[in-house]
Image 1 (tube, helix red, strand yellow):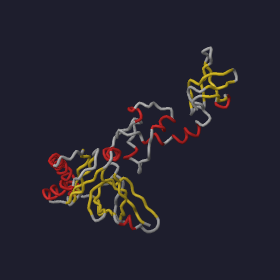
Image 2 (cartoon, helix red, strand yellow):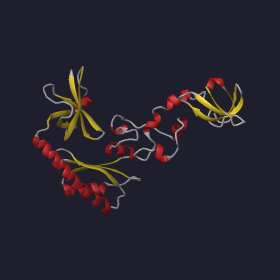
Image 3 (cartoon, one colour):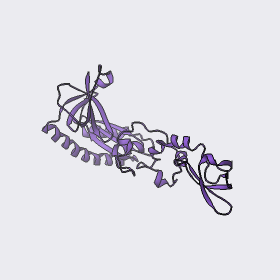
Length: 269
């Protein structure tokens, strides 16, 4: 039996850490952890108890202690220093003519490592900047280039559904998304309607596409010519979820049928 505390360092960045059985800690508590021999500060999102021994990967991260008042003061100081260091990074990027957008500049708990995360439209040679920053700040500098979807995960936000973005709450891996998924679900192809905070297609376009494909196999698309019990007409509206098709006849009459009541003739399927 072993305890695991899930410690959140930044929005969307949660690390499972071994937690001593006699350590009084719970969700919402702040703590100091050691992750791959580097100390850091975060807050506990949840604590679990699991059977068996801890794996080797899990053993590399552990909760050192609950955060004391001194630890909390040090953390706030690190946040202020990180903000000032961000301006230094901006100046260095301009000096070396690096076209980058800084997403996060953050010191770890003991300031032994400065983590700089950025986005860019091109691959950059940032080694000269890292070397000069390290010499000036007298610390190890870890620079990492990420994509715009990863940027949204780090920054966080609220989606159009009113809930926290999937990528910074529960979604661990990004799936491939394409416009065909939006077409399958009869969604508007307006970029503003199907694009997320990152500017890419919404991840949630994939959640229900399999259901729409399954339910839409026997539902003809708009513009299809179909044979109905009362004559031949053209489909003007198709509701996949409700399994209803609206057909317009030559005399401008419109009538709704179930897919099983009509027969496809030609046109879009």
